[in-house]
Image (cartoon, rainbow, N blue to C red):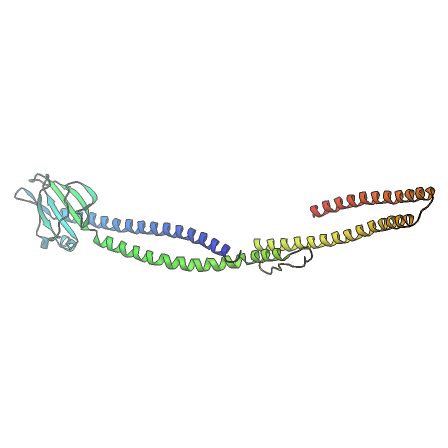
Length: 303
C-alpha cells in the first residue's frame, strides 16, 4: 500500500475541499455584489427624492434650480453620479454632474444597468409631472466602476487564498491519512510475513480504540485463533501418524517373516487372518480419523 493509499485519500479530500471552497467563494462574491448594488440603489433612490425637490418649470420645460440653492443636491454631485432631465420623448433638457461622460439615457421608470461598451452605469428613472410643463423624466446615473473595482479586488484575494488553503489542507490531509492508514499498512505487512510455520507475528496496535483499532485487535485475535488451530492440527497429525504407523509396522513385519521361508499352508492362512485383523483395525482407525477431522474443521470454522 505504501504511499499510494494516503495520496489517493488526500486527492479525494482536496477534490471535496476545492468544490466546497469554490461554492463558498461563489456565494461570497454573489453576496458582496448584491450588497454593493443594494447600497448603490438605496443611494440613487435617496438622490432621486432630493433631486425632485429641486426640479422646477422654466420656459415650459423642466429644469433644475440653482444648485447652490439646494445643498442636498450639491452634496450628491460627484464625478461618478449625474442628474438628467429629459423631455417625454427622451430629449435631454439639462444635466448636472458627469460632464465628461453621458450614459445611454433611457426614459423609463425603475432601476436598471446600462452600458455603452466601455463603461457601465446604474440608472434610475422617475417620471416628473409639474404644472405648466408637458411632463418629463428625471434620470440619475452612477458609475459602476467602484463596485467593479471592489469585486475585482475581492476576486483576486479569493484566487490567492484558494491555492494556499488547498496547500495547507493537502499537507494536513496527507499527514492525517498516513497516520490513520499506518495500522492498516502494518496489517498488510504482517499478513505477508505470516506462514504456516510462523504464526507468532502480531500487529500490536497501541492507538485509540477507534474503527482501525478494533480492526487491528480483531486481526490479532484471528491470528491467535489460527495459531491455536494450527498447533492442534499439528498434534492431530502427529497422533494420526503414530496410530497408523503401529498396524502398518506390524503388517510389514508379519509379511517379512512369512516370506522369509517356505511354510505350510495352514501357517499362511493364520498369517492372512492375522493381517485381516490389522487391516480391520486400519479401516476403523481411518474412519475415526476422518470423523475427528470433520469435527475439528467444523470447530475451527465456528470459532
